Structure formats: structure tokens, C-alpha cells
Image 1 (cartoon, rainbow, N blue to C red):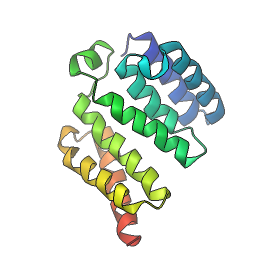
Image 2: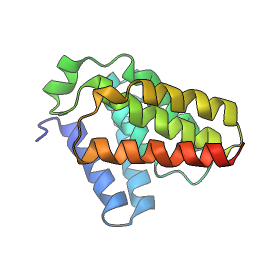
Image 3: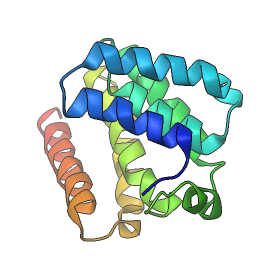
Image 4: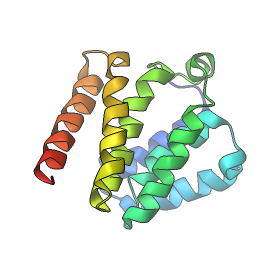
Length: 154
């Protein structure tokens, strides 16, 4: 359970998008939070999680990629201590497979299969940071599916 108010607000946006189907409302909420945290100058944990979530509600793959790359860059600045303070239950290392999966998928959609494969490889290299729980299985399944799509695109 998170006690970090910004993480709670981001969670509300995720709920709007994933559970209520209100993609535009989620995007609007994420944009407001982005302004409130100071954009890329904000707390790297907030920037990472918010940008990762914002990418999911973009209609344009170029915008989605831009947000995913922001999330990936911010993750490099997050510590496990900071994540724990905000109630994040996985290690920072556990964020990377999902972040690289999303970046790889964007590059695949854009037809840049070389970069897509690079990020798929980076995600696979960090997969050991994930547990064998529901989240870990979700990301591992996504990586398997993406690998199949990239193999078919050869």
C-alpha cells in the first residue's frame, strides 16, 4: 500500500485507463500530475512511473515512445530505498524488463526492428529481477510474444 500521494494519483489514472476504459480521462489526469511534479525535473520515481503510465494512453506511437524513453531514463535515477519509501513493492531492477519491453514494442510498431531487438535483449538480460508472481508472468509473457513477432518480421 502506497502512502505517497503522487503515486496514489498515478494509480488513480491507471485505474481510469485499465479498469474503467477512460483512456482520455487518464491522459488528462497524467498531464495534470506531470505539471504538478515539475515534469522531467520532478522526483525520478514519479517521473518514471508517470511517464511509463502516460505512454500507455498515447494514440501516436511516436508520443508513446517518447514517454517510454523518459520512463527508462528516469529509472536510472531511482534507488530501491526511494521506491520502498513510496510503497513500491518491486526492486528498481524489476522495473527494467517492463520498460525495455514497452520501448521495444514501440520500435517494432515503427518498423525499427534493430532497435526493437536491442531493447528486447536488454529486457531479457534483466528478467532475473522479476519474481514468479502475476506481474513477473505478465512481463515474461509479453517478452515471449514480442520475440515471436520480431522473429516473424525477419
